[in-house]
Length: 275
Image (cartoon, rainbow, N blue to C red; front, side, top):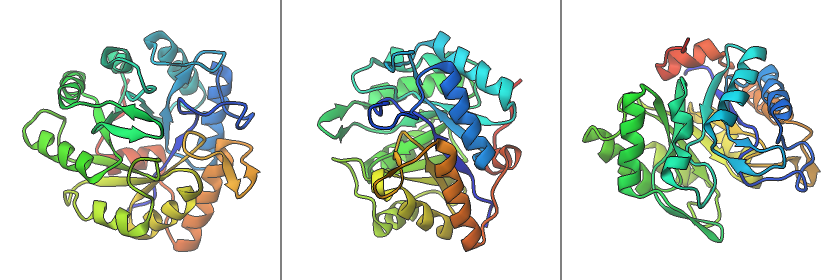
């Protein structure tokens, strides 16, 4: 079994300081949270960016500012910028980070209900995203909220419309309106992936650590962070992303999984460091 790759999704696009004062908005706060996660054991930081007032943005210049600032402090970390952005953004707006020299980026694999909103990811949009990632040699992390999303990704990779093998797939479970976060559902999804694929489990809200424990035991990888969950335990707000990562490290230790460094994660994910 490979060592465990921990991803920290440090701020997302939806959570606010009103929900947890530690949610980062500014460049300095984003660097602080990235470093806290890295120091606790995260090899990957999944990156959304905000304006200083907390407004989500996909602005290329803001991404570059945050990426440069993070890499100045933790130069070996793997960064996975979001191309999901926030609900309602256009495809071209969302694609801006792919114009930067990045190793990986997320690729959302289908339209779905997202709470009270609809998160649009049409097939033509996916073809456009795939074309950009192929041209810029960016490895996607396929974000799958449903089995249909996984089927779409597999079919489009087979046709050459999306970057191919080996695939890295993130199963995001527990979003209201999408697949519920249960171990049987996670097993169902994992059993459908190619033999050479790697996968990560993301549990939303109270499901974060149960899904993490299941993924650790099953040989998958884990994503945690403020984007997905603001609490370290029921009723207790997490003080940092690092605190959430540290809890996963403790779970992994109890279950006998070592923690991957960024360079070990690159080998597992079949990517090469840029620059």
